[in-house]
Image 1 (cartoon, rainbow, N blue to C red):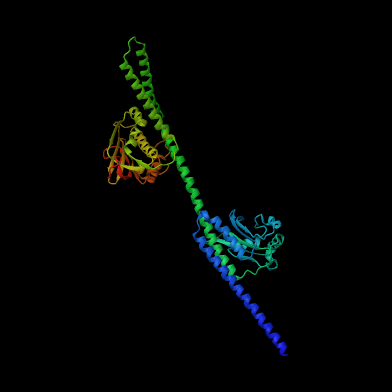
Image 2: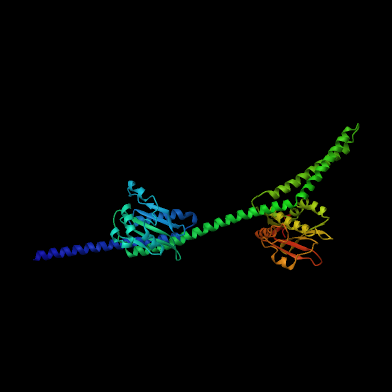
Amino acid sequence: MGVMNTDITESIESNDLCESKAQCHHIDDRVQFEELISSLASRFITVTNSDLCSVIKESLKLIGSCLNAELCRIGMLSDQGKRARTAYSWRSPKLERRSVHRFDEDPSEKDFPWAVSQMLQGKVAVMKSVDDLPAEAAIDKKSSLRRGEKSWILVPLKNGTRTIGGLAITKLSEPCNWPDFVVRRLQVVGDILGNTLARVEAEESLKKQEEEQVKLRSMIYRATRVSAMGEMTAAISHEINQPLTAILTNAQAAQRFLAMKTPSLDEFRDITRDIVKDIKRAKDVILKLRSLFQQADIELLPLDLNPVITELIPLFQSQTVIHQIELNTELESGLPVVKGDRIQLQQVLLNLILNAIDSMKGSNARELRIISHRKGEDVCVKVSDSGPGISKESMKNLFDPFFTTKKDGMGMGLAISKAIIKAHGGQIGAENNPKRGATFFITLPALSQNVNGVST
């Protein structure tokens, strides 16, 4: 009896020791898993878009290895939540090569209707073993047996209350009880992953929209420039014909001088100088037209606005002659420079000038004034006409897209001009003159030095 009691006592002590070791091992596993989840949570909170893919793949590897799983997948919902596509995946190195092909295709709702339904409801779907699944998961059970899956867990990835995908962890070697603390921590990972993926998706969508808007604005700017140039066709033809006609006349005169017995070399030199001058004039006109047609990137550089204005004069001066408009420029010298894109600012000014010319076609007194001056810390350019002015109704919507008082107008010129000036950090506006006509003005912030480099 005494021996028997001793054996029983030793057996009990041995069992207690095994249970104690198992409990310690369980505690160690739990602590290790808790530390892993905390580490992953902190990484996802601070991860950048460029590092997201590598961080997720590394996280799947760590989770799968820690849980002794063979497969980890993240599926994102598409087609209004009806279909999931594998976005990220990890496979254990111990996964047999011959069985890999079974997991190449994305599992569909048709194969796992119960699990997907649970996920869409924001619930965790768990299969501890194939026999553990409820009766309504008969199709899921059949699919798991066909794929050789012993156990799995599907955790919803949520952005707020909306499910955007799922985290699936699969065991092929043995069933798993999936302890409550593991399920709870995986739910935390699911929420963090869901919010992170949704944030990245939103940022990428916003970036794409911004790129499309930049492209659209560029196309509209170019269309507006082409439209403005179309209105100036007659003026351009006249402006180029003037130097060409002068060149032809001088060349014919030169031929007559050369036909004389004793031609005057001084006269001949004057003629050739006039020809060179007119060639340069025609070239300048063509270059300015070309720059307005070109679709170049925006380049903000220090600019003196006075040359920006004077470079435009040859492009519209013949219009003032055709319509008998008196042109006066009052450009203040020594203005501080501004930071801007020369072509875009010329586009704005050309649009204002053409509008002013157009408004005076039915007026008796026709005067176009272009004024530049300093206004506090800004540089101001004004385009003033002697037309009928702007009505109160039109003044309210003057810079709105698609608002126009012209029969064949697009209603985009002033709206685009406003966008350009705003992008330059300036302002654009309009007001009626005390006696007659209207004045459009733009103001741009001055840099700290004037065109001569003298501090202002």
